[in-house]
Amino acid sequence: DIELRLKWPNDIYYSDLMKLGGVLVNSTLIETTFHILIGFGFNVNNSNPTICINDLITKFNKEEGTKLKPLTADCLIARTVTVLERLIDIFQEKGPNGILPRYYKYWVHSGKQVRLRSEDGPTAWIVGIDDYGYLQVHEEGKGIESVHPDGNSFDMLRNLIVPK
Image 1 (cartoon, helix red, strand yellow):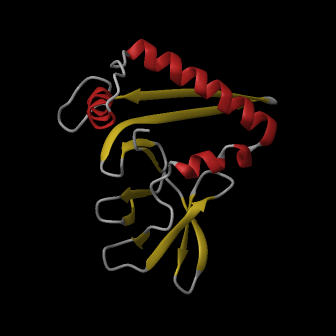
Image 2: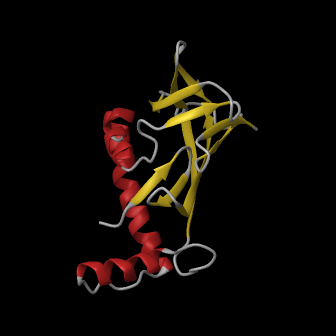
């Protein structure tokens, strides 16, 4: 297994250090039907400025003595769509609780301590996401609150959640 992680709200990381890709979702409700447009991008072949998926495959092959082939963009798209179809089926059958355990398994934030609003702001711990997909933090003395991605930015290197 290559150590891929998910950063809230929409980034894909190697470990918790290097961004490999991201996901954008746009949804619209027309009458009683949700229309969802999902876009995703992955760094497949470009080693600069950080790392790409095929660099990770090469590293994995060296460490594990395997001979996995490099991925092509079309192969990665096909695999991603196949997995996405399964996740959508699970979501439609079981709702968010059907996929959240898998999401949290790859999530970089569990139990992380952060500062809110500024580097000198109050300390909080990330506890999960709410029913709307917003980040939930537990602030000392205040309980759990939701942090909205449209109004906040999460700087992982500084463990800081600040208003945009």
